[in-house]
Every structure is written in C-alpha cells, then in structure tokens.
Length: 147
Image 1 (tube, helix red, strand yellow):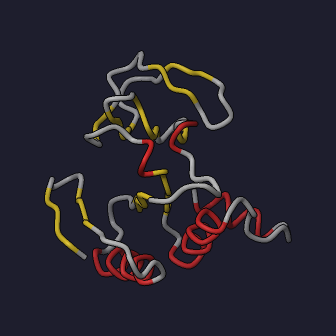
Image 2: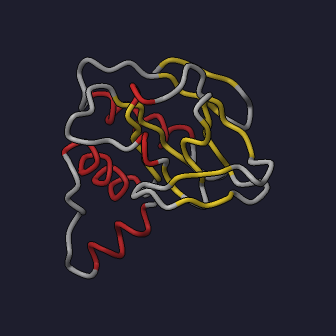
Image 3: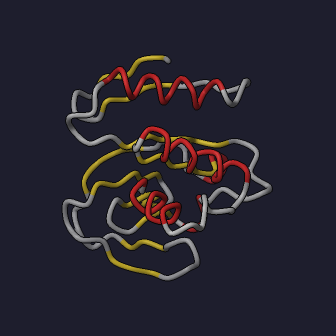
C-alpha cells in the first residue's frame, strides 16, 4: 500500500529493497499514490477472477502463515485459490522473486481517482517494460480496454 511506502520514506529508510521488479513498482506507488502490485504470472491458475470473498476461504501469506478470509474482502483468485486479499495481502506462491520471468501488475484505485491518473500510471509502468502487454479492467463497470 502506498501509505506504507510513504511512512517508510518519511522515516528515512528509503524504498524497500526486495528485487528490481518490486522495487520498481514501489517507486510508482510513491509517485502516483496508488497501490501497485506484482504477481509471478507463471504461478497463477488458468483463469484469474476478481470478486468479494464469501468468507472461510483459506489463504497462505507470503512467508507461509495461513489465515481464513472474512466475508466481503476484495480478492483475486484462480483455480489454485486466492491470489490476493485486500485485507491479508499476497499468496506466497504468487510472489515475485529474482527467478520470475513473467509478471502480472495490477493497480488498485479507490473510487474518486480519475481515469486520466490511472491511465498515466499504467502507461508509464508499461513503458518501463518494453516487451509488455496490458489490459485495463474496471472492476466496477466490468469493462476492459487495451492500454
């Protein structure tokens, strides 16, 4: 979340140093004050879906700890289970590592963030990865478009 990166920088610690891909999107978080995420694309199941948790879904955090999701948590899931939970974070098996070859980036934007800002952030992110492709999916209107 961008507020965590902002707090870290204000404490004089700088941007976290995890790996080049994660470090890159954390810089975009600071620049745009949006929540960027990255997932190892090759570890996901066939279909990636966006929904609200029903409650009771099992979730394994980065680091291996397990939890049970509460109802109405915003989630991404595939045929292997929950990939991302707004309340809990990222699935351990989807984390980006130094051996990751293909990455799925997402930008979470709350209501009120203008489409122009989102487009600008997405276009800059895509431009920093020359061989990338992108699709914009608006969860609320269920519309997608190419960027």
